[in-house]
Amino acid sequence: MTRPARRGAPPAGERLTRGTVITRATALIERDGAAAFSLRSLAKELNVRPAALYNHVEGLDDLLDAVAARFLAGFELTAADEHWPSWIRAVASRLHGHLRARPELTHLALSRGPDTAAGPALMHRFLEHLVSAGVSRAVAHLAWHTVLTVVIGSVQQEHARNRDRTDTFDAVLAVAMNGLVTIAHRDPDDRATALLHDHAVGRA
Image 1 (cartoon, helix red, strand yellow):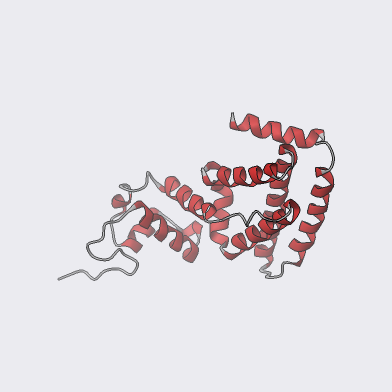
Image 2: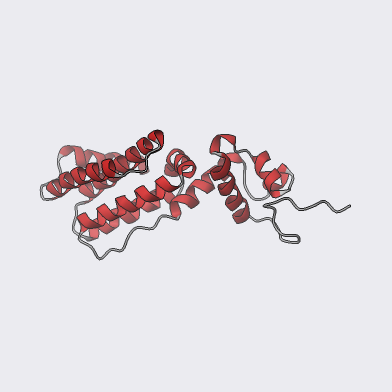
C-alpha cells in the first residue's frame, strides 16, 4: 500500500535540499514557535527520517543559524537617494516593520544573528552608506547602535503588550535622530570613539 504524502513534504521524486530544509524550518518555527521546534518535528513535517536532515545541516544549531541568517538577509536597506538623517529614519522604520511582522523569527535573529554572516554584513552596508554620505565612522557606528536600540526595544515592548500602535517608536526615534544630527556636526566624543575601537577589537 502506498503511503500518502505528508502535507508539506517535497513532491514525489523531488530531492530534499538545504534550501528546502531551511524554508520548511522557517515555516514551522513561525507556526509553532521556536521553543517547540526540533529536528524531529521538522522531519515529521517533511515526511523523512530525522537522520536524512543531516545530509543538509550539521545539526539543530546550524539550522537555526541558517534560518536566522536568511531572515536577516531578507531585509534590504532603503534607497540611498535621501539625505542621511532621512535615510536612517527610513531604515529604522522599515526594520521595525520587518521585525514586528514575524516575532518568532525576530527572537531567533536577535539571539543568533550576530554570529551569522548576515548580521555583520547588514551592519557593514549601513555603515558604508553613512560614511559615503560624509558621516564619520564613529558617528555611523553610534547611529547603527541607536537604530538597533530603538527598534529592538520598541518591538519587544509592542510584542509584550500585544500592541499594534507605533506612536512610542516614532516618538523615541525622533528624539534619537535629533541627538544623532547634533552629534554629527561635532567632533566624535570619547564614547563614540571608544565604541568604534571596541568593535574593531571584537572583529580582530
